[in-house]
Image (cartoon, rainbow, N blue to C red; front, side, top):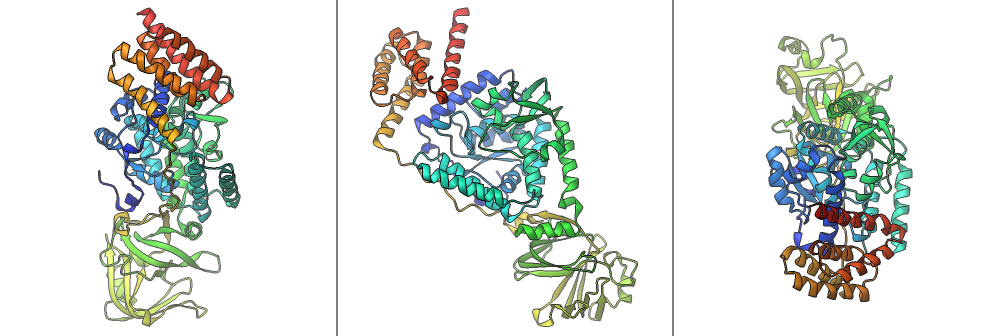
Length: 585
């Protein structure tokens, strides 16, 4: 797969061998539940999409194999390390790449986890992407999310969420560590004082791609990945106590969400066309469409890489740090600090990359004083009248009062419009005498444009600029250190898996399974999942009736704990359904 250069730093190896037999059992439990429950309740593309995307109920998938399968309908898959920022996560999808976290939820969080995991992203996101209309929507909202402006507080909040998710999924984490992570998240949430563009896009994404329903409020079907991958929430969401509201863009972007808890309401879209219309409408409201001073201010608040687009078509990429204003508080000059690049139509201009403009860039915005024609629209005759001719001294004054004086070195056009004028021995000053550029600084490459028509997050030419707006998080999850007792439990899970998959004769299964069950009784009295797997095998083989009764009794006892009741009940229900099917046969 061709992964864009600015996204490669987020990609990691899957390291399939790290998955434990318990990880595999967790995958199998959730997938068996989902296949049984979602067959008639999920969008029609779900079941077929599972098969088409290389996902099997019995084992955690290879993302490399998924990538090959998904390529058949224009998508790909890569592995990432936990949470990405919203901008980076959506940027992958804008390029038709599904980023999939390598981790899988723990046994303790089998019903739902706030952390991204392979169950959520592979089994939740991938299947519905086979629907071409839905896939188009995901690419559209991904592209909008990649362009939406964020703030420094947004990134700090992402880091706090990432940290809390890692701590909560770490079996070695202490209560104090969890409390500290929760406090850190609370402080990050309180620091967010305005709803940024990326938050608006994220809300729409959350209530559709993650937690969307389709059809009618009275008879909805599930398509959101958060619902398709959650045993608990997929069943809960269709109950009457969860509000089903008709989809609307304004309602979605006005409604915040809590990733750590069940959702109190969901939105039901009519069809995927309604979602496509909504994301196009949202785009009209953002800086990428609005432009102007307010959009430039958003770029400054982001403290990150952004692109300002002049009316001439010139795109200026870098970190915008300062604006000069006129008496009406409209921006008339922008200043970028650090590496800057110039482009048109998302293609970097030769000789104007971030190596050349390594120390920053500044340029006026607006019309020349007394000129009816914008500078970018001027003919050669009009330019000559202003002495904008190579080798001549030009003295330009903008309506804002900014003055540019220097010897013209070059005039660059693109599709007929003037986009750049280079000056040597150039001085740029405001009417109040404040100097913006001095001759000893070198050639002054002046951007040309009467106004800023668009501002968006990230680089215009992403491949050449080769840097994402959001850097890769320095927070990494510690690798688990298994105790001898935990490793022994892994061995028991693997033994049961081998019995189920190996087609062992009934007498051998009847000999080995009781030994495993006795070890569970002696050393792992709280483990319900492996007991359920053993019960499944002896029920299917119709062997060990005394152990059948014993295991059912143990599971009923473990189900008395509130956190186990629904999980064990769901597992037992699948056995009952299997029994009924065999009896009918």
